[in-house]
Length: 129
Image 1 (cartoon, rainbow, N blue to C red):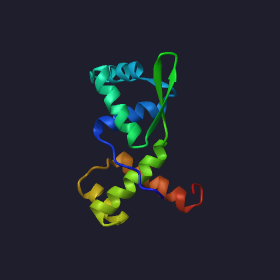
Image 2: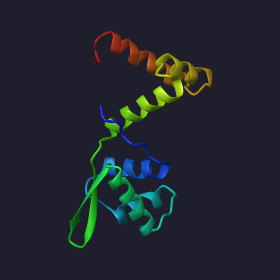
Image 3: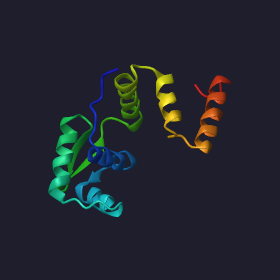
Image 4: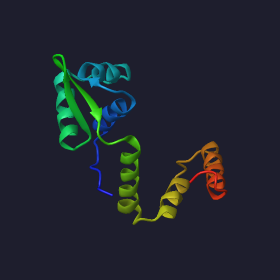
């Protein structure tokens, strides 16, 4: 599998909006960011989209006088690459090391732990593969 480039925090915010929508305009992105409490000027968003295009995350096409953007890499593909990279870099490829870190640092709540146990049980039972 080809390694997916990493994203900055803002790039990831933009991609999360793009992954949920099709034919996303710069103005739509600006409004979505503003609705979530982040104000960015249109030129800043355009710059970020140019970077995402160069990284191979989005494609753009012109509709009328505006460009619209769509994802080239889906969210699942990015998440898989991101988790694999973090696992390799921070935990020497050890999934138990990652789980231990989550548990030792109390980054998993009791209800999340119950959900995880259920998911593991279902996975082992062959319900999800």
